[in-house]
Length: 544
Image 1 (cartoon, one colour):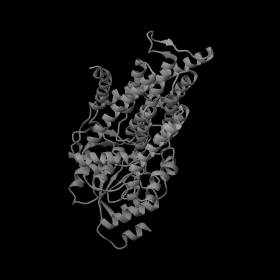
Image 2 (tube, one colour):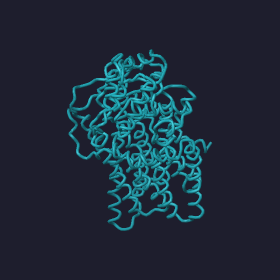
Image 3 (cartoon, helix red, strand yellow):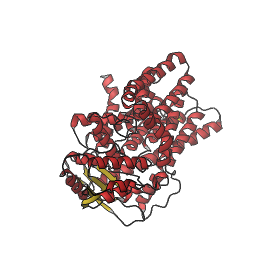
Image 4 (tube, one colour):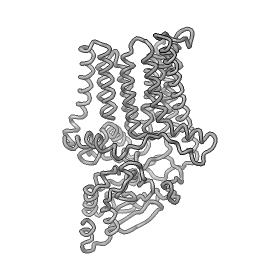
């Protein structure tokens, strides 16, 4: 009975977290992010191997997980959403447990609240929540079961390699500080390498060492940041026409990345200035938190704030309890610190951490509330694979400064219907411009139930905008005569302040489609194209 009573708070928090995730379980689709993950999952379910059979630069864990779900349930937009909600609830629960190791009840509960809203407010089939779940599991097991922490670290690498690198670095530093290197460090490192090798060795053998190195290591390290990094948000434009609470909400959201970085610094300062036993685990966790800060800085948007927010929640709870010990019989009794100035500075840092956690919670609660409110205006997508998922009937898809362009859900449904009425066979989904691509629409393959005639589901700038890849795409279209669906929304060619937002100067695919394809039907921003009747030297002149 005592064991059940002890588990009850955690079970309640997990169920509440699951309920928060289920609030908008069947709302919103993402043509790009959701599409590329589900299209890859369909390839995995069909027996294809990433890096060899299709272009893929993410670690394999997420697509094999979604591929297994695809194999089990069939084509559907729902399974990944259930998986994400379950994982989000688990991440928040583990953050609560980790925070509770060195913090009082109320700071730990604050850590749970910050975590659940941070990971559920900008949802998607991204791999980071699973990686974060295993990372938190590793931090929880590192003290008593370093071998199990190593296994979890190896699993983290299957979802996010850089997460595993920072976790391993922090764990090694922490175990060295703790002492007993021979017993603990060797267990940790050995089990981590064994777990990672158990998954990567057979995959690399199937995909080829060259392909795997190029897409898992070389491209992410040398190329990705050139095309995806955004300037860190520091100068706010004032929120446009927003007023009142909306203006405040926009201010909070815009400066959330900066607030998260400052919260990490404040938490680390407070922990450094206080004296408590077992500080090695604080060092381990802070190093991993620093890694999550790097993950955010690379592209400081809503989809990259979650990991740092969760680690801030844990470290912030520890910092607050290090200065104000809420676990004693007299709550909020100041903990001892060496020297008056250290105590004062630690107190200020803990207050900064508390303010940062409040900022994060306010912003993500507002985002979640807005998502729930906007979902009231969504309607069911009239496509079988959607399985009841809903979307807004109209969304703006034009760039700032351009004429307003509205993307209609009915246009997407009509375009999918037109493609499904064509003879069976693969298709290719192109974007507005072949020389400048910042987003694609690979979800169309999933909705239409058609394979991609090429290896390129991801509209990766620098890849599909290159001459070599465009010639490869043209060759596949020439060989098969596959229909082409063009998504002409302005957001597919956004002028981002990086290489992705600059023209590559390569328009071979655009020229080829203009010369060799004709328009079958147009549905708003969706255009269905079929090959023109064969004429002399059409393809040859297009590819010169």
